[in-house]
Image (cartoon, rainbow, N blue to C red; front, side):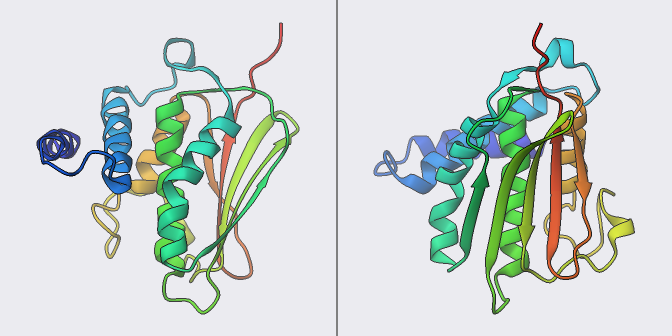
Length: 197
């Protein structure tokens, strides 16, 4: 229902004069397409049906375009630590971008009122996985045991972000992990590499 409402509003806005070429509106359209794709996913592990070979670096390039304007405006420093080459992974590119956006937005909210506003997005190949970490200098997670549960009290919106993100990743054999840090917060997206035959 929420995805349908967002899609309808987006289509209505597309008819408003003067919005063509507006960066925020184009970003909204991209997000809406991603939501429509996610809404059509059956969030079950069926990688042979849903997943394709995806270049994580290309998805991170899309993420950079979407988040850097708002981060600059909020005076948040984003550090990109992306390996020069990474194996292709099994994933759905729209779903993966939505997960990355959700994690980046969570970090933005966590650090918006902190004296040190830094977000580090790192991507590396580790053993039998490609791992993308979102680490911020924010307020941290007071109750890690409550993570990944839907409808959390006090959460922004419906509190479904982490729950849905993990479900999306699991639909193509990926995983979302919380990694404890002395300060701030770190989430790791773990993806299965495409095995060469």
